[in-house]
Image: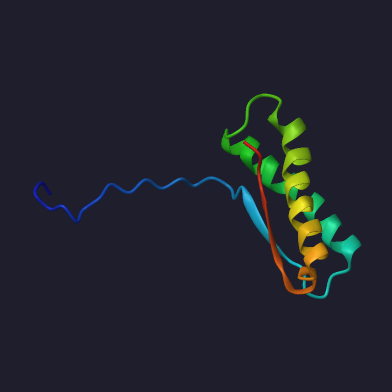
Length: 93
């Protein structure tokens, strides 16, 4: 395969997802917040299982992940865009 510049190495990581998207349409503020906390727990557990976090990462990761998503949501609420938005919850790493 030498000489073919259009061929690239492909690396596939079969790990569990470390980000989730929450669609806010039809959800109350409380439901969005609850979904954020649940999603943060899931993505951080996945990151821990994938080996993306250190030995105590599963303790602080959900706090940081949910905090960032809650700040996104609060900004959307203040701008009047929260009713039909999407939030991404990512594992803090």
